[in-house]
Picture (cartoon, helix red, strand yellow):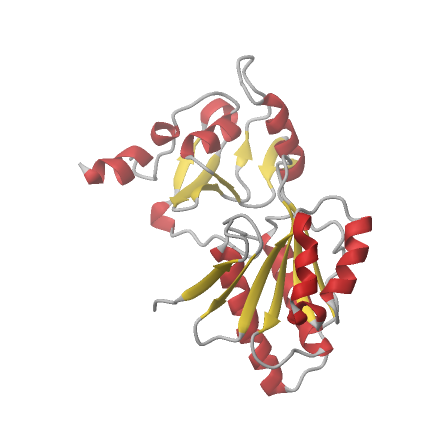
Length: 275
C-alpha cells in the first residue's frame, strides 16, 4: 500500500534542516544538522520529550550513531555538542499531536537500541547496553510500537539504514570463490549485499587500489575463525564490483564474477533481461 510523505525543507537545502511526516500518522521527524542547532530555539516541540538519533556520516568505513531520549532535546543536545565529536546531524522524533511522555520516549529508546544492535549497520559505542523497557499500559505500548514502525520508515526515507535488516530470497543468491574467498550475497535497489558468514580473502593483490580502506573494513566486519576471515554482519556495497573487490581482494567485474547456484551471472539475470 502506498504512503504519502510530506517533507518541508526549512532552508531550501535537501541536505539541510527539514521535517517530514507520513499522512494520517502522528510521528514527525526533524532533521537538524549540527551546524544549525539554533533552529531548536524556534521549535517548541523540540523542547519537550523526544526520542532522537545522532548520526555520524564521515569517512569511516562503518558509520556511528547514538540513540537517546530526553525530556527536552534543546537542553540535552548542549551536552552532546560539547562531549560527542562524531556526529553531524540529529534525527528527532516527536508527536505531531499530543506531546509524548517521558515513559513513551524511554520505550522508543529501548526498542531502537535493540533493533539497531540487531541490524549492526552502525557503530553504537556509546549505547553499550540495551536499556530495560519501562512499564507501559498495553494500549500505550501498542501505540508506541506503531509509532516506532513510522520512525523506521522515516529514517529509511532519508537514507538512514540504522534499523534495516536485509531479507534476501534464496533463489536470488549469488556466489563467488575467487582467491580463496567463499562469499554469497544478493542484489537489490540498495546495491549488492554480502551476507554474514561469507569467507573473505585474507590478502590483496599488489595493484589493489583501496588497500587501507579494505584493511579497516576487515577489522570492523570480519572475525578470524577456523583459519578463515568470516563476515560478522551483512554488508551492502554500492555496486556488485565493489562487493566483489572487497571479498576477493582484487579488481573484478562484479556483474560477471557473482553467479547463482545454476551458474548464471548477475549480468545475465538482471541486465540481459532488459534486452
